[in-house]
Length: 640
Ligand SMILES: C[S@@+](CC[C@H](N)C(=O)[O-])C[C@H]1O[C@@H](n2cnc3c(N)ncnc32)[C@H](O)[C@@H]1O
Ligand SMILES: [Zn+2]
Image (cartoon, rainbow, N blue to C red; front, top):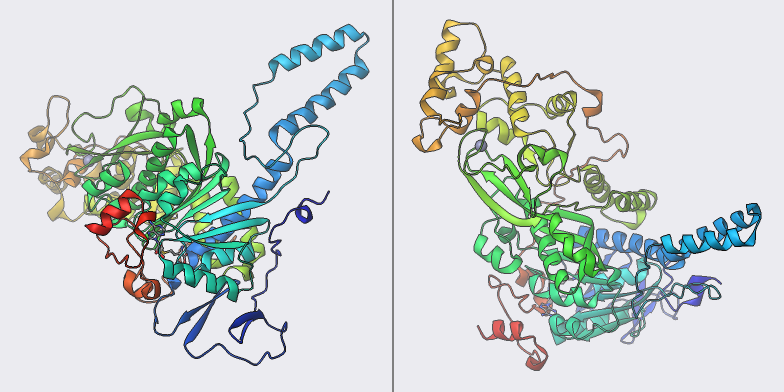
């Protein structure tokens, strides 16, 4: 049976053409379907096209269209498209089915080689015993795996919980195959009117994209019986108040949850108290604050999911411009939830040189973290490199934040279909960088920051990557910033690498520890190869850890005063050469325009001036809102 034709889905074509739409006598029609193709949109409206969607808006509301978010919508369309492909495969060829087929083949083989019936049945019995218990299917599962019925794929249902204009939903409908239905929800009645108008304008039936007016928190919490395959949260500010409902309303058998947060000041450590209140984690102001933010958002979602015996598997987590966007699949497993703490941990951050030391909850380590956490030997108070105190950031998700196979599928698709994605260059660049990130290294270092700690010249990226690889460690970039690295090399090695670099690019005399200067003046030895005695003796404790409190030496001076322990080769390693040859597209593209940013909500969304997304630092304007439909949180905010 042809699965797609059997289902009442949108059946979006893989090669989509931008629809041309006409307004005739107050109704919108696809071009050519009606007599007069010359007629134009009435003078009070303007029209915007993005992807396959065309939305109209009143001319009075000049700036309502947020083109900064095109990348978000392009990437989301791509990710949900790939999710749909994978889900279809999972439904049509579920693991049980595959196992059954394997078992049958094995059985047939055995029957042909076994001489007695007794032997065969014994073997079958023992095989059955060794099969792992099968996971229980969700009540809303869309497949039937019994032998006599072929599994079918009925497509996906999507909830866009905070829809604004319907633009995103319209794109999903046109551009993603197998979409069964979309609920485009918004709190504001006027927004819902806009959604309805745009759905009609794009010639989509109101049963395919249902414009719904509700407080998303209430709606999601009360729609848990028929779970959505995809739930998309794209609020202004934080998504924190919506996470609980989203976790409950997304299918716990591998459904996809897509979350945007734009409150980067909070997630990046500017307001640690607010971050703890919203996300349950205490951040520090780190150089790698954007990844810290991503990881705190994921840990917050997982903590919420755990209450419902669910766990998340991140497939793609991006920090872009002024926001984060993450995609996680959600599964139900009471057993797994009990061990999910292993993916969580704290980061101890040096207040002097910003070295990071990781500690997973419950202990455990990866090769990269072995040095400090294998036996819980996190430095207790001070940084082993510079002696300054450690600060704590956490807890946060320390597990992988992407699925490299999933990203490869996305890349493959977008590379073959660049015409479908306005921002395809940026998507390819960022996704390639994300795919290549070391998945077991939580945070990144800026090489220029490392150099600034030591007050030396910057080490070129390729030289640093070579040195790390030459020493047998791993290194990658990050999608977040071009001049940052992730590595499993310990900081002691990174500083040794810098000492080697300084041999040929000396630190200015004025910033060197006094002892180094003295020694340099009497010997021809370079700064880094001299183990200084004066400075170290004056500032060390019994375990040779300098105490920063005497403030005699800067972190960099303490580091440079110590002898280099590792052999470092700065010779260029071919594997370290970063190139965009394979895509022909640079990884990091500059912002498309000056002053690229979120804009102020009022200007972006004047036409349907949004209500609070429970963000105290944003204006609220919830007039005309049916108060009964509000969640307690929203009501409270409204009256504050
Ligand atoms: C950033 S806009 C959404 C943009 C849209 N997803 C897109 O891609 O074009 C946020 C929307 O959330 C709506 N909103 C705020 N609080 C809400 C709530 N509690 N329930 C439902 N919608 C809400 C606002 O009215 C606003 O239209
Ligand atoms: Zn330090």
